[in-house]
Length: 317
Image (cartoon, rainbow, N blue to C red; front, side, top):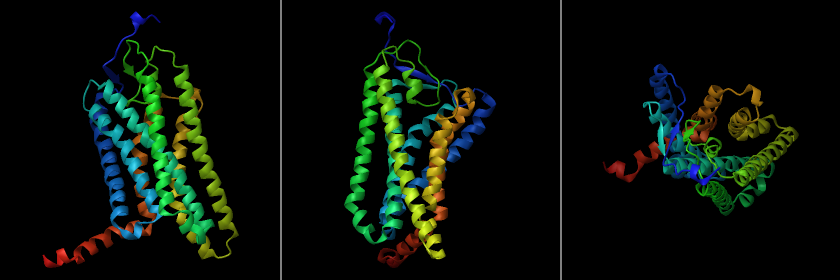
């Protein structure tokens, strides 16, 4: 395409979740409730795992970062999506679109590998309990999280920089309700073969490596549990990683539904609902799953309130 046909775009138009005006108000109410529950749940987990000394273990350390990632990528999408359900023109500036994609990509990539780290932590706790404190030391946990975040930032910035250096055509309608990468690059007029190759490499590495770690960890865990002779020991072991297994099943199940289903069965409305579930519902479900299945998390708010009430400051009052 001639350079004269290329243009600099300052704004994009996002397609909303629905084009039916009568559904916008109830949809806004429903999504607002989901988003607020997600924020309260994940922020609550972050705070509890920070202030309760009994939750200063590797499992809750990774859980805190999982909640942070959930809060991060749902907030990158949620507020703008909620605002767009109340207005007719779903405009978004170029800078805000690039920022939304970058933060969403960083946190969603981090979540994939945090789930892998949590699977490995479960494996060590069940299969090597005597060496657990040595293998999953505080230094190791912090190093794993730092590597995860650095890689996520690097991968996301590399892709967004490649996009910023490309040229856009005059068409500025993004066929999504947020700035996702595939609808975004469909607006490019430049040669995007290199960009697509980079995206495929990162996506394949992220999915295959993380899923491989999860599957190997769970396989070894199940083998170890089946070798246990004590019924109580089996129950305790299943309880230890049951919450994480549920979260992983929901997360990867949604990914496979969105990306692995046959093209012929794709429906734009179904795809939009899948992405709503992926971006808002999953971050809401994760803290619920861990809170309902974990006795320490359920007891933590009560213990924290009791400790605050027993503090010298409270007593003097």
